[in-house]
Amino acid sequence: MSKDIETINPNSNVAIATLWTKKEVVVERLKKLGVADRVNIVGTLYTKYGINYLLHTFSHNPRLNVLILFGADIMGSGETLVKLFKGEVDKELNLIWSLEELAGVLSTIRLIDLREEFKKGNWQSLIKAIMENYTPNAYWERPKLSLREAQVASWPVQTAGLYIQEKNIFRAWVKLVEAVMTWGFVKDTEYNEKQKQLLGASVVLNYSEQIYDGLLNYFSREELERQAKSLFEGEDSVAYTYGERLRAHPQAGDQIKRMIGKLAHSPSTRRAIAITWDFSRDFTSRDPPCLVLLHGDLSGDRFNLVAFFRSHDAYSAWPINAYGLVRLMEYFADELSRETGRKILPGTLTVYSSSLHIYEHDWARASMLVENHFEKARSVFVEDNKGNFLIKVENGEIVVELRTQEGLLAKRVSGKSAQEVLRKINLNALMPEHAAYLAREVYRAEQSLKNNKPYVQEET
Image 1 (cartoon, rainbow, N blue to C red):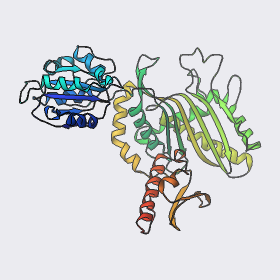
Image 2: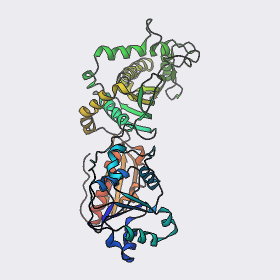
Image 3: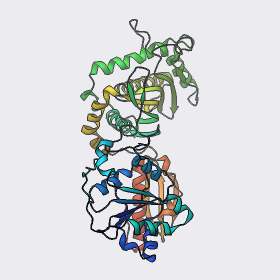
Image 4: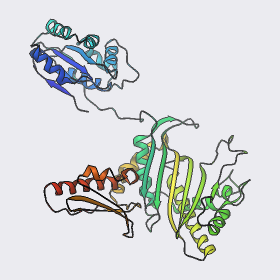
């Protein structure tokens, strides 16, 4: 965060915080009233966190000892500052230093609160305060504060909504963990441990030859295969497995077999679902299933699978769950090929995590994973399954064509400016990287059009 200040007379001892009022408005009025040269600094104070920067400024400027509040206190930063000078710390004020560290700074500053006078438009009160407290070339000894930016341990509010598209489980995992560690809201769990949580995370895995690459660097083959097996069959030694609920549900029986039969008989069905929840015991269970529902889809020659998790451990469970689900998708494709007599291929796996979280005991390992692999994961090109855009300049207009992976034209828009063209394209539906690339290229095309130069679309 930078300091929004203007220095007028470095030898003055008076500073003015204009809060949400533009500092330029106050400076211009001070000049007209003939008192600007008696003020050292004029600056805004938009946020409560900005109080840290204000105090840092005073600690490093021994000329200053008078602070006048004169402006619109829209977000309450002025009120929080007044409380601080009275020894009260607002619960929403994230101070970088302790009150003990600040004592030597606060005790050397005289705070003059003229917020009410500003509301009345009483500029004479400001002039009077400046004139009565102006002491040029004075010097006050005070400790110098070190501006160490506070790290956000928890996102201030519970965030929801995340979309990642990948063709590799490991890279998707790294991106997912980075998102939870960055935007996760810290809260308690039912296991007496804290968690970072992000709601409503959706990961789309496009089946490819490289979908499993990298997993063995963190998980053993035995662990991965055990997870895959648990989706296909039960175990006598445990309370339940997903395979038990999918293959022998108390009410629904063998749901995998039912899904395959339904899709083979009616490929257009949207009713090929399986649930793991047992209403007779899971509401009171200490360990109810995290995976709640599967939805199968057969479109063309591709079998697609959607999995809904009510609760999902992003660091320890997500990658092995994804591995097992891809293996299950391969099984569905093979069985449907046998049932229908035509070759069915695995398509996309969509993993929807209602509560995506990382437990506190994994925070250090999660941070290390991100530090070691995130940049490389982000640098790998992933093709958007929503097609490709061809951009050109024709007849004095920017032309953008959306084409399928096979090159077929799906949509064509045009306009004389980048803004006009982009308004006609649903950027929210694209991968973020794809949307950013498209916007950048359309603006490049606009510059070429304005400068009468040829435009050549750059590769991603």
